[in-house]
Image (cartoon, rainbow, N blue to C red; front, side, top):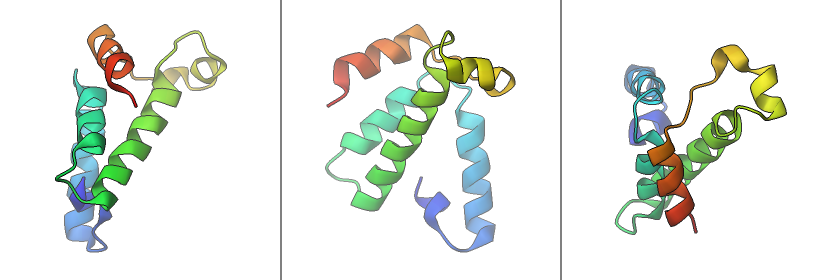
Length: 91
């Protein structure tokens, strides 16, 4: 997450690539939620994680939503385990 906030493209671009690749892994939402709630992590990183979690959930949570119909080719299914973790731990 921290690398995605770096103005140096040689650091930011690989960090963004890693984040994009991570979206397809189980546990992505859970990790973002853990980062955003971790009191030992800087506020800027927590905010970046929370914003990414919000955008990811809005786009990918419900396959029956109007967003799904508009972005069907870009949708990344969220695992049931991730959904349960988010429901149980969201503040």
